Length: 428
Image 1: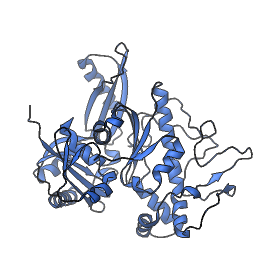
Image 2: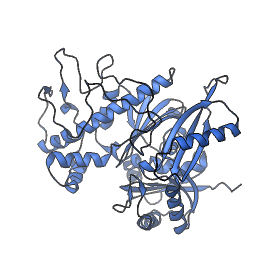
Image 3: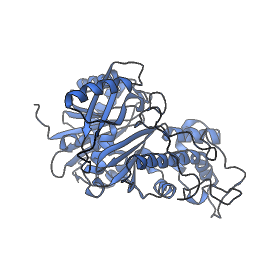
């Protein structure tokens, strides 16, 4: 058996930003260096790594600039369409029977054009599981062999040892749950808001129960701003960075003839509560990563999102103090996407509740670049009725970051959850 490394660098290759975190094992583990740099334009997209040479060169510079010299690397698979993660319920069986059964499951769950894949699975052993139950749960990850080979090739070119190649939901559990006793024993939803997509992962006792990915991300917000204001996406990206904010007193409240809220915030007992139907196809869209659940189409009273839209003529806005008109336009451009996000979070929570009758979500944790949107945590809290916070992957570890001060580390914590979680791979 290979020797367990004492220091690992976690690597998170996003379509917009590359993040690295060097973590030393221990009790608690220690983060010794972090780094963030722009991803070369067009080098990574939703399908994964497009330009390996550009990614390798940028990653080499980032590691050097961050003072990271360890050779052991744990990579998160890049690209929302390059991996499928599912939690499956199967009859209890022997390891040999399970291996044969999972071969069938892998073939059934391949959404990729190339059927040459690599896969891994593991039985989930929940502390509160009924030992006499007839079924057991298994987490399965499947990725095209090319996606894995690309990371190995990059590692080889940089003289890194690919200690692990893992999926984001498990990395998030390590950095935001398993190192933090106040969340590890609860049922928690982690919402990771990236540039191309947003993942909703629900955990019980730190173990994955329900993974799902939505094709809603920061780039979609940028396009919505560009469309509404009729400007270029480059200008829209700059406006988003400068002015985007959830304006809580500007949220449209649509009234019905019966004075029952049909828009805005979710109110328990009223319309708009997500419904749970039968379990359809495991894939929300071709190639997307889901947890074996695709929410059904919205009810007619809750139209699906088809792009940026104006509040209807019946919408009324509460009394408000004067506000920058351009900031308000930016908010109205992104609000339909935020509303869609909140709706899908509610539906995911309702589906989880239907599967685990004795469990409820105690907290929603936001991370990723989109988590920095001012007041987003307040909005999700109000829209779901579930306490919502911005995740801090440094809360449960020691910090001994040499290249950056505490202010820099704190300001970028929301971006680092996957990288820190990958760096923690040798600690769990």
